[in-house]
Structure formats: C-alpha cells, structure tokens
Image 1: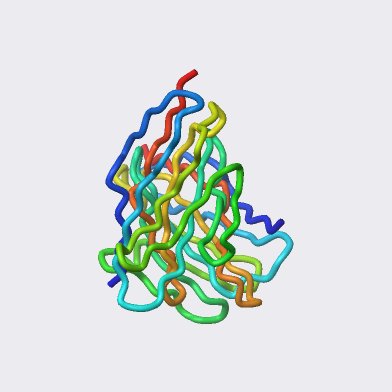
Image 2 (image 1 turned 90 degrees about the vertical axis):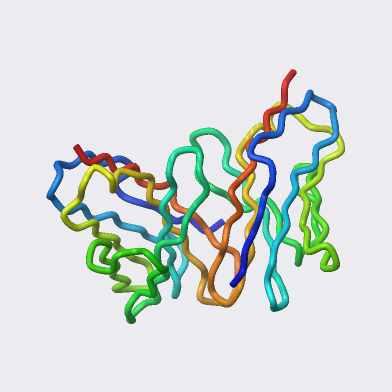
Length: 107
Length: 116
C-alpha cells in the first residue's frame, strides 16, 4: 500500500529565508507525486507535480527515487507563502495525502 | 481552470437526520470523484472513490450504509450522511478528475457538517 509522510507538522521561517518542506513516500510502483497548497479559508489547489518539472510561485520539487522523497523547496520565503502544504501520491486512481505541513513565514 | 463546487458550504443538522452534500464539476466531465473527510488540524482522509454509473469503492473503516455515495452523472456526485450523529461532524471535501486521463484532481471548497 502507498504511504506519504510529511515529518514536520509546522515549519516557521523568517521572510527571505530558504524553505524546505519534506515529503517521503512508499510505493511499489512508479510514483506520481504532487504538492497541494491550502491558503487560509480557501480550497485545496494544486501547486506543482513532479511530471511537469515546473516552478510555481518560486517553489520547486525534485523526485528522488533513491531516497523516495519529493521535498518542496523555495530559496526565499514570502509572507504570502504561509499556508498548509500537502504532499500527495497518485497510485492507480487514488490520491493519498501526507499529514500536511503548516508553513508560517514571519515578517 | 476546472471548477468543482460543493453545496452546501456549511450545514447544521439535528442528530438522527440525514444530510446530502452535492459535488459538481462545473466545466468538465468527471468520470471519477473522490470524497474526503478532514478533521481539525489533520490531513484529508479518503472515504470513497465513486465512478459514474457504478458503485462507489469505500476505504477500510468507512461505513457504506452510513455514507451513501451516488455518482449519477458525469458532473454530479452526492454524499448522504444517514442518521447523523455528533461524531460525524467534520469537514467533507470532494475532488474530481477529468475523463481525459489527466491525473490532476480538482477540489471543491468543502462542506462543514455540524451535527447537534
């Protein structure tokens, strides 16, 4: 069975500092991984997916199959990045979410 | 972009009554819709996967008779919480995937259910 782990429930950084939100997964097949973001009082929305290898809002994430990780990174955090971030694994037709990490960017 | 709408956004009901939550894909056809439950400060837990025209697939531990799911069309899935109890109070979220094979899921805004 697939599993997604986000070890940090809360990550607090100062504005301008680098950010790394950790995500590890376990899945026997070929994984398809996503990062979703939920801003305050808004619905969950897709931030990026590993297939497209794009950078959204300055965030990037690289799939490391050897370490089974898909960490989300941003070199300089902004206050508007404060939100809940969920790592998710698509296996078959099911999306499994990690526990989520709340990112707080302090001024 | 694709829009998924849930109705109602918030519902308060008496214990013992049934509540229906609708999930609609407004501008695309969704062969598959998912229902999640989110407890305060916790992640989303998948309850069931529904495919249009067939029975829903429930996750382990989710009572089929309590959480009735109907995916009657390519744009509508409903979740009915039957004989609701206070412990059913939660945030219920649906998501939908396009039928074109795109694996991206689009989420509704969620429905807050409060059972008193």
